[in-house]
Length: 299
Figure 1 (cartoon, one colour):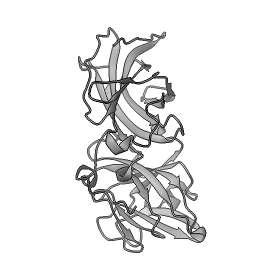
Figure 2 (figure 1 turned 60 degrees about the vertical axis):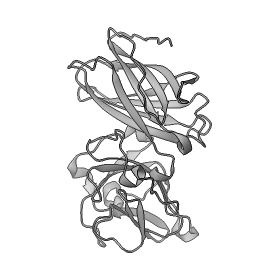
Figure 3 (figure 1 turned 180 degrees about the vertical axis):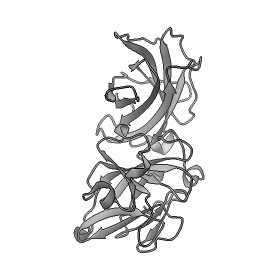
Figure 4 (figure 1 turned 90 degrees about the vertical axis):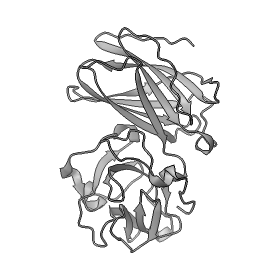
């Protein structure tokens, strides 16, 4: 398997190996005199890829954040056609140029080849001022397109969601230990912290509107509010991204609006999400319900 490396003035070049599958095995890294390689392992086995156009060339978005960068670097990787591996996974090869310097937060988003809908996201934090692992970096991308990472409130006007257990309680419950409430005023749905019937805890932060790859981290504490209306200052829209501080488990959830819904038309909201219980960015992690294969098919 041949890897190529792209070099640009003022930049350190990183070979990026995109690896699709459920086994999450790591291919051996080629030697590099600069930075790299980076292994992107897409943990998308079995039903995760059944409806996705991953056999074709997908769209892979990336974002590079760093405190010394004037602005984040964003772009699209062109991995070419996939290479089937011995264990049935798909390997994608691409090149990525990462500016030298200090800390970097790299985030990635793989989109369906046919629809461009998000399939998986992931992120990794590195410090280019320090030695990198001799076998390269590993980034596991987790699904945002399957049952355990999509919340579809089709059976309810609203309710409270528990990320750890994947339980959705019909509104109005708001018992201690839930994470995110879905409520409405008139035809408009909104979000609120799910720990109290009357939202008082600052657990929701509005990140912005756009692809999830643009919002991989945890915002400052001052950006968290009890409701989406207070956090955003406007109604919820398609592609809004919120960061939710969890109470059902340690850590945070990154939630993107797929459909804001319309209560008057009995159209209910839908969301995609990733969680992480230990890191302040959406590195690969799974909820207890996901790990135990107990996610509900009702929402």
